[in-house]
Structures are given as structure tokens and as C-alpha cells.
Length: 536
Image (cartoon, rainbow, N blue to C red; front, top):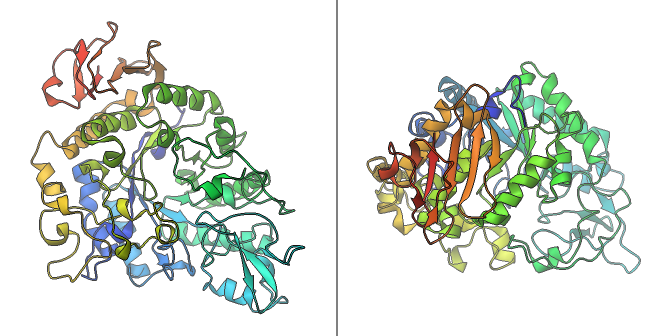
């Protein structure tokens, strides 16, 4: 678990996810845009002090799945702005010392993408094999039993050609055939296009899905898991061993890595893949045996553990043991697909969750709004926007995508005054829970995040140090961060609604705590319910 010999920015940095539709609306149409992002960059660089921003899709798209159905990978959708606006965003971010990571959507396109329109024009189309087309099965139905993440078959029948096409998500999102070298080259060119425009890295959407079983065999049945992770009974009734993560995915990732590393300044660029894999040895395989695949596969372990200290300990041990030599871990507590932290854990517990996220060994990602404790909003059926929620009640993701709450003014300062409506409703608690209010409240969520990020920036032990779990009792969760030549830092988290003792070996002053009255004082011997302290 030695630190990297030559740390890159993503080893020590903190990533902040921006969902462009919901970050800031500059033109008053109720939808966030690139100009709005530019106008609020100081929140990232000055208020918080993070190191990079990850932008969810802003590409040309019919918006069937809010930008994850791309109709032109190399242009900006007019609702967000122009390529010139994007160039200005990158320049303004870099001027503030912020790296820019963009979403790369390689598994599928929009059904309105010129590639698919050509592919669908007939069986003899020059791009027919750019997508996955197959004849009906023996019974006249779909070629196999694969199901869509959004419900129903993963195959749609095309009357004109008499074949089915594959889509692991919406029918409007046909899957690309990455076994076709022309597809691979075209998608590599997309990476080069954005690197030419100055982006510093790529978050690769559903990265493990680009390689399917070449024989398209049926998925075998599985027991429906009861692990608390958001997944439908239909989808979880199968073991997804053939519709994703075929072993051929590893050479595909190695080629992507060569494209990124081979670009001018490529050694300073970053790839992170959305890999929903909870077998830690399989998860770790995406780094590559020689660390020549993804720089990091996203680690969603904390989405399963919740704030159960025993499960968190188990995840930390499993992940650290699975890492290849020299690999660097990462941690995630929320994103645009998951219920918000406060909604899952409650107000006080979410503060302990912030301490956990920002003190574990590895690269943390913060989802917009979590730093002020935004909660999910229950969107009524008539205003549901998410296609998953409309197709499968209870699975909608709108609640965690509501507009960012900047002020207590109209539309929470997300849209200019006089805007008719926002694309999703603003949470009604925005008058008391917003950036402006919390900047003036030293006990707020925002103040805690700022103190934690300041400490992390100034403390090499928290950026690059080793991690050692202390004791055997599940609660409090205690770990020690160490780095050669530096004093150790202790983290103690009481993840319960009762008091908890602090181990006697924890000594030093409280650097940051969920309760400010602890800070600057010696380490307490007992913690209040859901209290966390960083001691050094």
C-alpha cells in the first residue's frame, strides 16, 4: 500500500461531479448550461477547493435519457451552448487550477445518430455491423433472453429489415458493436477530439458493458439478491455473465489507454470507468495486470455498505487486498443515479459520511449539492422526467437531480428571476438550505466540507498516506493514516445513534470534527451519536 512514487493530480485530488442540466441556468430556459457552469466555477476553486470537475453529458442528443443517448459525440447540444462555450469553460477551469473530466459514452448511441440511421437503412448498409443486429430466435422472438436495465427485452424488432437490434438501456439507445474495428477507431477518434480541446480525463459510462459474449448466449438464472442496491427484480433474475464484461473487454481497455497515453500530454490525463462490480478481485482486474487499462474503475462499495461500520471495514479490507501493486483506490457516496446522502442516512449521519468519504485512502468524488446536504425531492408522477422512473415506478432518478440550491431567491438562484419554470422543480427547502446561507453558518454542511477539504489539501498523510484499521470492534470505526516522515492522522467515526468510546491509543488534537466544539481540543474519550473526528 505504498503511495505512488510520482503522484498524478488524480492521486491527491478531489473530483466534483456536475450534472449540467441542474447546476446553473444562465439563459433563463430552466435548464442548466455551459455558461452557467462557467459562472459558478469559483464555488469549486475558491469556496470548496476541489481539484477537478466531471461533467455529465452535454453532447448533441434527443435527450431520451438526458444526454446518455448521444447523436453527435463531437458537438455540444444547443440547449447547453456551443463548442466555443465549451472551450471557454475549459480555459476558465484551467485558469483556476481545475481539471476537466468529461463523460465518454462508448456503449451506445442515440437511435438518431447518423451511424445508426445508416445502419438501420438496410441489411447491406456499410454501417450495419456498427451495431448488434440479429435474426429472430427460433420462436420468432428476440435472439436471446437479455433484458434492458430499464425493463423489458434488450432487443427491439425492426420491421423493415426483419432483424432485432440490441439495446441494454432504452430502445432509443442502440448498442455499438465494439468488435468491429471501425467502431473502435471511430470511438478512439472521439477521445482524441476532446483531448485536442483540452480535457484532462474521461469518466467512461457503463464501461464494463462494451464487450458482450460473441455468441450472444442466454444469461443463466440467478437468485434475486437482497443487497439493498437499486435493481429491478427482472434484471436481477439473471446472472449477467454474457451481456457485459466479456473477457475481451481487457484488450479494448488497453487500446483506450494507449490512445489516451499516446496523446500529447497524455501522461497527465485520466480514465475512470463506471464498473458496477462488487467482487473486488474482478473489480480490480480493470486496472490491468500492468496498470495498463483504466487508471481507476469506480468503486461503488459504499453504496452497498451504507453506514454500517462492520460492512465498511469489510469493504476497506477487500478493496485494499484486491488492488494490484501500485494501483490507487477511489471512493464514491453518491451521483446522479443514486438517492442523495442525506436522504439515505439523515442529516447528522450524513456529516459523518462526509468525514468518511474525504479521509479514506484514495480519490473521492463529491456529487453536486451533497456539500450543502441537499435531499431528494419526491417528484409527482405528472412531472417525472426520468425514463427509468416513467417505465418502472419507484426507480426514477429525478429526486437527486433537482436544481442546485445557490440562494433562497426565486428558483434557488439556479435560474434568473422571471424564468417560467425549471426542468425539474426546485426543492422547497431551498430558502433555508442553500450555498449562500451555509457560507455564513460555521456549523453547516458546507462549512464542514470546506474544513475537511482544507485539511486534506494541507495534509499529505490524508492525500497519499497508508490506511490501517484499528481494533476489532465494528463501532466506532477507527483507522489510522500514515506516511513516512509525517505524524499519523486518526479518524474515528461513531456510526450509531448512541455514544461510543474512543480507543485509548488515539491521541492528539482534533483537526476537524462534525461538532466544531471539538476542534482544537485534545481527542475526546467518547463520541456523541453520529459524531466523527479527525485527530492528529
